[in-house]
Each structure stands twice: as structure tokens, then as C-alpha cells.
Amino acid sequence: MGRVQWLSVAVGCAAAVVTCAVAAALVARRASARYRWNRAVEVVRGFEKGCATPTERLQRVVNSLAVEMFAGLASEDASKVRMLLTCVDELPDGSEEGIYYAIDLGGTSFRVMKLELGSGSMVINKKVEYRPIAEELTKGSSEDLFDLIASALKNFIEREGGKDEGRALGFTFSFPVRQASISSGSLIRWTKEFSIEEAVGKDVAQCLNEALVRNGLNLQVTALVNNAVGTLAMGHYYDEDTVAAVIIGAGTNASYIERSAAITKCRGLLTNSDLTVVNVEWGSFRPPQIPLTPYDICFNVEKKRNHYDQAFEKMISGVYLGEIARLVLQGMAQESDVFGSSVNFLSTPFIFSTPCLSAIREDDSPDLRVVGRVLEEQLKIQDVPLKTRRLVVRICDIATRRAARLAAAGIVAILQKIGRDGTLCGTTNVRKIRGEPKRSVVAIEGGLYQGYSVFREYLNEAVDEILGDEIASTMYMQWWIDIKWIKKWIVRYF
Ligand code: ADP
Ligand code: MG
Image (cartoon, rainbow, N blue to C red; front, top):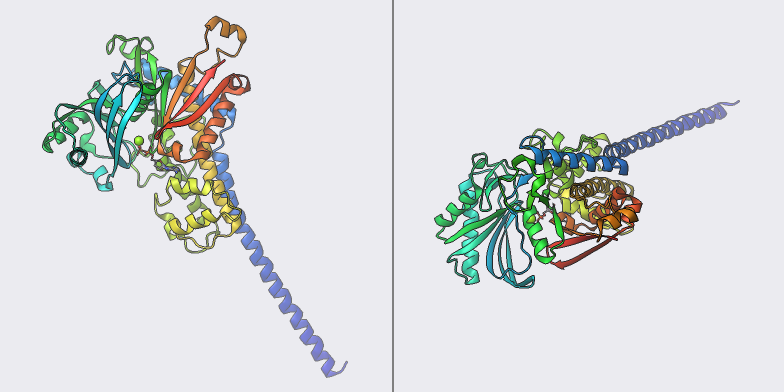
């Protein structure tokens, strides 16, 4: 071979080596990208596994909650589920008339309301105003908080052109309260984002009454109720077959009508009536069958108060669902580069709200446009590829599914506790023994439930599953929205 030929062979070899090196680098880069993608998928799979709620596990959750409810009725500290007695032994039946004012405090905002009622379950007039509560007021002094409410009420009454003379005020206060009478009760502890320590143990109705006086109002709290109890009253006002109420909003809770004889912790002391409304306070239930995942808020120790409490609430309700999803997204970003490098916002607690989560889960556009927009607007993450968007939808779905299915288990537990879960109605013989089938209405209220249709579907589906085909097929369910803020769920046994 001549010199020129050797040279061309050498050049050819060098080119082959370079090509090999480039190919190797490409393969390595692809392998590494695949590895990182797989890590992201692994995070989601781990979350999914941790959130699994197969039917039989839900049935055990139902039984556990029903047992806790029994224990809570037997003695004061026997259960984390407090089963608070409400001093309510009578509910409205639609015959009420007159003008009433009410305050609703229990979440990120409070409501001031004026209702004009006519007989026959007729709301002649209703005026509602929402007012936000600045975060510092949820952690400041009780005087500041109640002054804010009283002055808002004063402005509201003035604008309405109404007079406050001798008017009764309803106060819906959605935190655990030890009720001394229908119009007074001391705060047991704060939940959700509130933590005004000096208010714990105080009579919250009196706090509001004092603020009303300070603001020159001649109104008095005549009824202090939890929102779950308020919703039960509302449900009963419209439909006397209402037996329970469930709140699925910023927090979650339930109330129901119990036989007074079943309340063994203070038999005969509080009421002469056969029935008493119980405020379940199910938010503090810790379902033993459901493991906490590393992304559950209870694990997020460093910043939240009440962090190990309220497990049920922190797996279900609106304050927390978005935050759980954010923590999974953050975990995913740490494990891989699926979101690129602009992920600073992801580490801001509570930046990803539950309405964002529901918007993502309900996006049915083929290219998941809404998902892209929410990620961009809320988290400042741009140009997320379609397959990653799908992963984000899956995270939101997993958190939603577990939440809705646990809420369904809660509802069935109450129906079981009062013998309305249909288990005794499954056979013709039993039905004959029991006579007429009972109609039961559960009133459900709350922003999460109302604003998120997938949540409602999952909840509905899980109730069917838990009760089993045989019983579910004997039930007739109907949902409707006849009043703006309350939806009813009707169960009939045939
Ligand atoms: P509260 O009366 O306790 O303040 P609400 O019943 O008003 O609570 O519900 C507010 C909660 O509902 C918020 O925490 C929010 O996360 C949730 N929410 C409101 N709208 C939606 C929606 N469209 N999708 C999902 N969650 C929602
Ligand atoms: Mg509310």
C-alpha cells in the first residue's frame, strides 16, 4: 500500500472512532434520560401504591370508623373521633318564618348572611357576602379576629338597611367546640390553618357577643353550631328525611341524628328528647388500614401545626389535596429533570391549590392544554411535554381518588352506625320484617365537593362498591342542586 492509501485508511479509522464515540455518548445520554424518566415514573408509582384503597380495605375503614364512633359516644376520651354533643335536639322543618342573620366562620373566608324565611321551606330572600381572612388574623389575637367579623356584620346590616334591634344571630363556627348550651361553647382546639392559642378554652359565642358590643351592635348569638350541624339543619329544613350531613370543603366533617339512648357518655343529662345531633369531628380519625405516604401533610413536620392530627381531614379536604400533589411533584422534580431546571416555585408550600388540582384532573383536551397552562401560571414551569403532563394528571387523580373514596367510607360508616346502610334490607324477608323501607337523605356541602365533579363521581362509585352490588342495586340515588350551596344525596331502600 502506498502512503496515500495508508493515510486514507487512518482517516477512515479515526472517523469511525469519532462516530462510535458520538453514538456512545448519544446512547449514554438517552439511557440517562430514560433512567431519569423511569425515576419520575417510580415516584408516581410509589405514590399510587401508597394511596391504594381497594374495596375490601375501605370496608375495614368503615368498620373502624363505626367502632370509633361507638367509643366516642361511650366516654369523653375514648376515641380521637370526638362525637361532640351539640345540644341540638330539634331541627327546622320548613315552617320557620322571619328574618335571620348568620355568620359562618371556618375556613379561609367567612360569610355574613341575611335570610328571610317564609313557611313551607321557602327562602324568600337571601343575601350573602364573603370576606377573606388575612393569614395574620388566623394566628393573631381572638379580639382582632372577632372584631373583624363584628365590623363586617355591622357594615352588612347598614348596607342592607336593616335594624339589629333584638335580632337573633346564628353563628356557624367550624372548629371543635365543647358545647355548654345551644348558644355557648368553648373551643377545644383549632384545626385547618388557625392557631390563636389564647382562644382555646374560651366561649367563642361570648367572644363574638363581646365584639358585637364593642362594635355597637345590638345582636346576640342565639345558636352556635358547627358547619356540619348547620348543613344538617339546612338539609332537614328542606327535607325531613335528612339523617346526616357531610362537609367536604376546606376541611371535612360530618354530623348525624343519633338516638339519645345510644349516647352512653352522658345518658339523659343533656336532653329529654329521643334524638340528639352529634358532631362527629371525623377529621381527626386516623384510619389504621390506610398508610400515610411520605407526601402526606402529616409528614410535613417542619412548618405545620396540628401536623400529626386530623389525618382523615388531611387526606380528604381542600386545604390539603393540592399540597399533597405539590409534594409529589416536588419529589418527582428532585428525582429527575422532567420539569427542567425552573422548579423553584415547586418548593413553595401551598402554592398549588386544590382548584388547580381539579382543573388539571378535569382537563379533557387532547394535548392537555389546561395542564400546561396551570403548570405555567401557578408553578412557572414552561413547555412541559405531553407525556409529563400525563404524569401530572395521574398524580392529581391518585390524590383525588383516595380522598373521595375515604369520604365515601365515612358516609357509609355513619349509615352503618344508624342502621341505614342497607345491610339489613338485603333480603326480602328482612324487608318484610322491617316494614316500609326507609328513605335517608345525606346533605353534602363544601367547595371541594361542589366544585369538583370527578371527586363526586369517585365518591359515588365508592359508596356503591363498599355496599356491594346486592345492596347497591336496591338503592336509588338521586343528586340535584336545588339550592345553590347544598346538594342532596338521596338513598332509598326498596
Ligand atoms: P370553608 O367553608 O371551610 O371555607 P368551602 O366549603 O368554601 O370551605 O370550600 C373551600 C375549599 O374548597 C377550598 O379549600 C378549595 O380548595 C376547595 N375548592 C373550591 N373550589 C374548588 C374546585 N373547583 N375544585 C376543587 N376544590 C375546590
Ligand atoms: Mg363553609
